[in-house]
Length: 142
Length: 216
Image 1: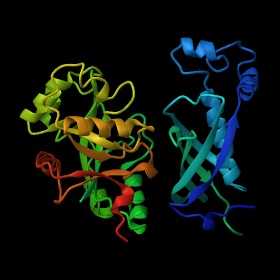
Image 2: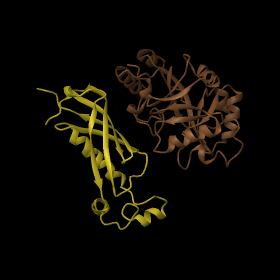
Image 3: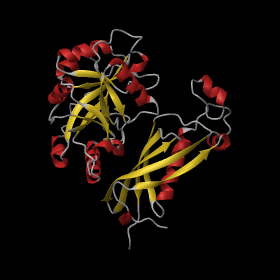
């Protein structure tokens, strides 16, 4: 159902979404992303540990992709204009992560209905692993 | 008075929030019955002397103070009352500052330096307190840090209990909606950085979470 600009306000939370990220999902992503670039800290737990990581991690671009999917799903009928991400902690896999967000501002800019959001990827303990600031454009009512 | 003693604006490289966005968000918190009266911008490895936030402060009714978060050999330190003398004495961009010298010099020039997020695994003051140099100048640490992972504030609490330190609270916000999540409650009004240092030295404060400020 289309989400309209006049339906949202500062302080509104975006409905959270959970996602189970498996080793296979990261392997599949890396197959496409790095054109079969071989084992790496993203796909091999032992290589990751040798690099000082606790285990294999989700590539940053993949986390960002999931975050964009979360925002695009929320902004049904709108579009994601900008997403600026800060990687605070590595996202290990396999694990279930959740996406949470909140509207921090809304403004009409150059004819666009812009909504600013803070968005986070959290682990099961609520630790915020990745943070982002997004600008979403929502439709107005005709 | 409730003061967020630790936050970062876009003047820090890893923050995505402007000062005005923080102040607008505090109006949202106030509508919910929560109270944030002042924030201290503690930018990473710098003192932001160039920006004047007095107009925004008046517009939104929030006191905006400035401090710094500096990198030392023994963890990050929050500096309050960072005046020109202190800025001349140390290269704030140095990531291996001598924390003992920093605390001493801060004391001598009317400022104060305290360990930030001491419970942070691997890099917090807890890792060094009994291994490094003489930290007898430490009397206050950041007890509640809004950016902490599970277990880190608990480590800080244990440190405070064990060493009889006093504890402050700060959100460590890097994004708009994180401002004010942890605060320090003072009995008096604080209008500038000097009064903040005096209030800390008076030792009458406590760390609180945002929810505790809701009196509605």
